[in-house]
Image (tube, rainbow, N blue to C red; front, side):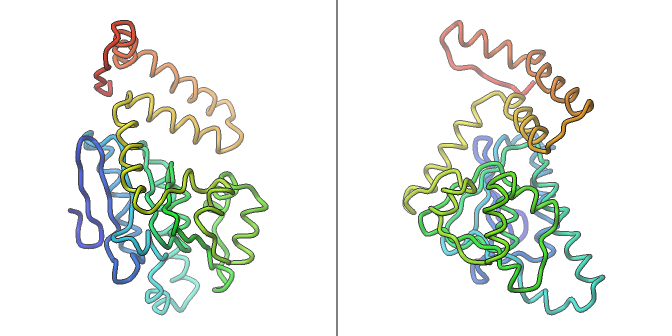
Length: 262
């Protein structure tokens, strides 16, 4: 448990974090945006968790976006800038956390929640999933950090359509454009995501962690000398780990490896 607005359940190295405001379609407040990356970073530092599943309470919504009631409290550009800074910092930190983060989507994923999904590593949706960024209807211009990430996922043409039309997209449309990894029947989604998490959690943590960072480095565009050096270090950390030795021995001995994350 992590307060009333987030529920945390940890089992066998898998942490399920539930956005817990079902009566508000799991709308996110500023306090929740500030708290969510802290939860993920605590998992990273604690060492018990290897994979995170992020979902909304119930099956009506992953999250309906920002709690609109807080918008009424912001009247000056400075207040809006402060609010945006909190949300953008959350997106940035969630994207960078070393653990793989899997999003499980039932129902609506709107506005800021679309951005939250973009920062996750894998996204699986039920057939009733609905995705949208209604920023154009509010006079909002999305920040560079998120716009760049969405372009990387679905390309500039799809990103322009999403931001300019502000229309809603079905789960199948989101999957066709590459935003969602897979769409499943509503009754099968939870079990499927749990199976994906279990497949990840039994693998070598250093391989999973360093592969995520490697992909993020490459996705960022120009690596430069420092980026290439870091990529080489990530690869050599795998070869120098005890888990690499364990993986090789287990393969030769035809048994399941027992990875320790070292």
